[in-house]
Image (cartoon, rainbow, N blue to C red; front, side, top):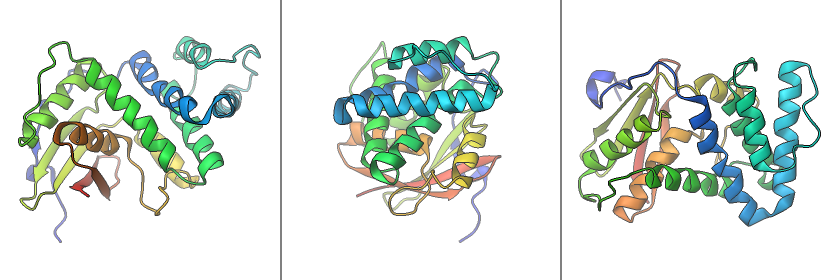
Length: 237
């Protein structure tokens, strides 16, 4: 199989910013642990907050406040530290989610699906002109997702797709602000799903959004994991 090039893809308009809005990304990703709290209860939240604050302490060399007990308190604390942390504060949220998932499930499995279902729902709810999607037109579905995430200032810099003509599509994203965090998670052994495949947040949201639009289950395989761009093949189950 020849290596896929960006010229093989239909590319959407480049995002009009060089970096996402840290507050918007934090607001989005805190939805993940809130959704899992509904399933696992307060024990999950307590562990999640513990791991998040431990990471802050390691990054700053200072102990965070001891009175952070809720996810909203953690969110506000991380937002307040956005300019002083050596890593983007949303890295800490995702890292804590992965670590807590590993503790509760041993891998990125059901809890991660719950997380991204909640994230995708929040993205969909940001649409002020919501209309039924044309569920046979993948381009329109992905274009809508792209527009919503760019408007929320949470999208990767570049994004596109390729229809493979066999019911599968390849999606590409470049300038992803999570790449270094994903790379660190992969090196630590916590970016793998239960079957050993690499987890990709962008591809997971794409599949969840396609599911909502087409009413079919979608999954993905990461074909390329690279700082320049990442590519995933999405397919129905």
